[in-house]
Structures are given as C-alpha cells and as structure tokens.
Amino acid sequence: MRRLPTDLEGPVLIEPSVFADERGFFLESFREDRLAELGIHERFVQDNHSRSRGGVVRGMHFTVGEGQAKLVRVARGEVLDVVVDIRRGSPTFGRWESFELDDRDGRLLFVPIGFAHGFAVLSDVADVLYKCSSYYDGGLERGFAWNDPEVGIAWPIEEPVISERDRVAPRLAEIAEELPFRYPSGVAA
Image 1 (tube, rainbow, N blue to C red):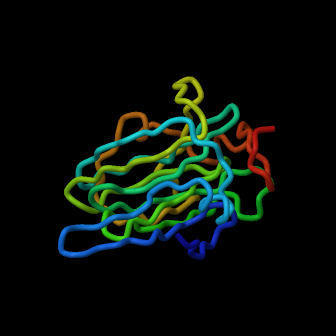
Image 2: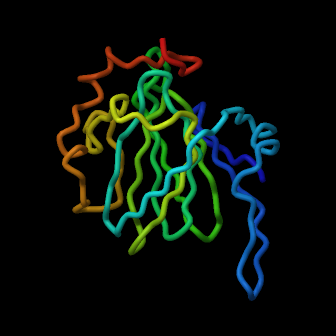
C-alpha cells in the first residue's frame, strides 16, 4: 500500500498492491498496521455496502455527534468519489476534491471526520464498500445539496438519479453555522 497525493488536507488516497494474473487478482483491502503507517489511526466498527445503478449521484452526506470517518472502496464498477471540507475555520472550507475509484486498481479513500462524502456512478452498476468509525444512527445523518452552486462540484453526469433526501437538502451556507466540526482537528466541538 502507498499513499497518493491529495489537494485537500485530511483525505487520504491509498493505492494497494494488486497481484493479478490470468486467474484474476488479489489485494489487501484493509490492514490496520499499514493504514497506521499511512496516517490513518481510526478504529472502524461497521462495514457498509451500497449498490447503485449507473447515473446515480449520492451525497453530500456526513454524520454529526462524534462524526464518522469512512474508508471507501469500490468492489464492482466505477465511481467518481467526492469529498468536501466542512470544518469550520478551515482555509479550505467548502472546497471539494474528487477521485476515481474502481474495481480495477482497488484504490481506497479515507474520508476523515469533518468532510462530507458523495459519489457518482460512472459504470452500469457500482458496489461501494465502506468501513465506518461509528455505528449508524439515522438521527445523526446530515447533508447538503449535491448541486450547491457555491460549492460547485463538477459532476460528470448530466441528468443524475437523485434520492428525495438529496433533492431537498439545504445549501452548505444554510447549515454552516450549525456544523460541529472545527479546523484543524475536524472533531466535533
């Protein structure tokens, strides 16, 4: 495993060693000691798996309370994975960065607490797997508009399939004062 460069401070893009031949491939998708060497010290307590059809955009989601870090990878298909800095006081507040994740190179993306997360499905179907640092609690789920013009995410899909929850989400500026994440740590205030 090796760490690849990112523009935003916090997210970590990881390239695993993939051993492929005519039979298929093998890769380590999670190894706590190697992740720690790359700067990821979160304890993950829950695994999630989502399947989405082509053209779906999910996001931009985050969890309040203690927050929730995620380690994301794609087991089938291809997505454009997007993170947005939502740490109050951060010099990059509201900035986004995207990463292509797919089932060929096996890259993983660490999304730290204090970042919103979303993705667009670029293939016919995509299975997205993610480890979470806290247990799911629907009462702590939050989000902002996937198409917030002030954030300006360049989604590669002209007519995305969006959930009702994401369709009616507020703009980031409307919830900015309520965000519990503070720079530099990203932990809840």
